Amino acid sequence: MRLFGVFWWTAFFPAFAVFLLWRLKFSESIFLRTQKDRIAPFIITMVFYWWMYYLSRNFTDQPEVLKFFFFGIFISTSFGVIINNYIKISLHGMAMGGALAAMILFAFFYHTQITLAISITVLLTGIVCTSRLLVSDHTNAEIYIGLIVGILCQLIGYWFAI
Image (cartoon, rainbow, N blue to C red; front, side, top):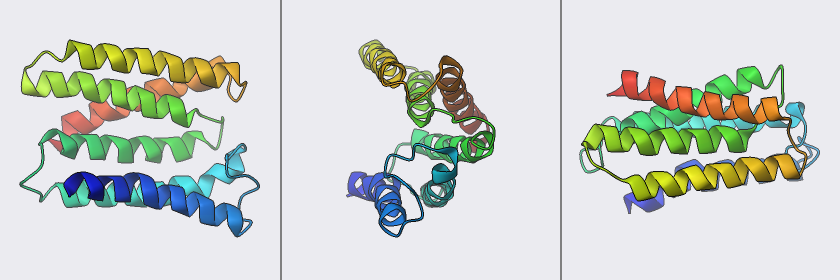
């Protein structure tokens, strides 16, 4: 049930909000190709991520690492909306950088080796970022900045939310 709730609040509602913004003509495309199109989805997603972090602080039946993970993704969307004013930061890069950092921090937090999971995450990060370059949606700098923001925000979440 918890997994369903996490999916609902962090994936379904933000995606549905983007769909509504597009259908109501608040954005030109559902693919959010321009920096202007990304502002409202950033804010909406930020609210949902904050809500998940806020709720996770009181959950006793979930892994402890989800607290800093949710805080990290909230922070990354906060930084993302600010950086979006200057460049079209790669949201895919932010997500994959955050996922990679989270996997490494999970292993560090629980003092366990999850090298296969980390290796798969590294591979997926490379595939996703390469695909963004191949379809020419971003420059190298935009993708690297997205990766760095995702990684740093998970580190900040780890240091401050635990």
